[in-house]
Image 1: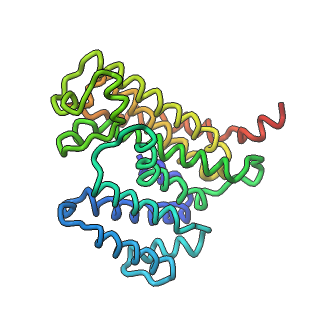
Image 2: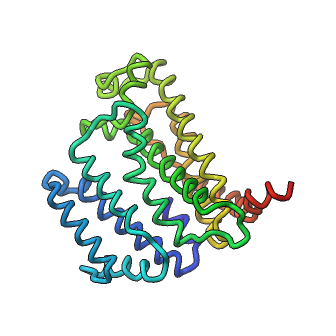
Length: 279
């Protein structure tokens, strides 16, 4: 989905977003990749030191150099990158989340941060009347929405790794437990639970939409495309009768292509802040 979006960007922005994306993927691979069993907190400390060197203009390899170049071109702050590494530390020591507040913080660390990294590259429309804070809040909401969608799509896959990225208190309120997830049978209790989780994810997507309209014209189309495509994963979970234990929800090529002109149309609309000021 990211590839679909970035192909619609200007070359400079595309290179910058890919440099950020590659760093995020490498960071994620530390705890989710083939060598994840051997990763220690010390290894993440070394990765953070390498990040600091990169921001200081001392890249370790060519991929680091690409991000170092991006940092020199756009006003990118190091804090979201540090926070993502903190999210990886959390993954090493934590496989359950007591409530949504805890899960939200995890989603911020591993995905909300990506939104904050990306806004300086995307740029805010010069005609926008929105506050910078509100645009960053919307970018954060998009990252949260995407991660919640990932979690709901990957319930079965995560369960096979002994992980449950769902609020434990809400599972209990629905009459469910980890054992139900490991057993992996779709029941009415599971359907009702999933409906509430999907509703919450969609609320974050709706919050994100307002911010997309405030981005610079050249960035709106790819971000709209990514948002619309990712949100469709939730539709596919519903179409699979909430069986995210053994069926992986995905958006087919035809639906992806249909989303592009819709995204383009939305990208032409005035920023919400301007529309509101004209009414």
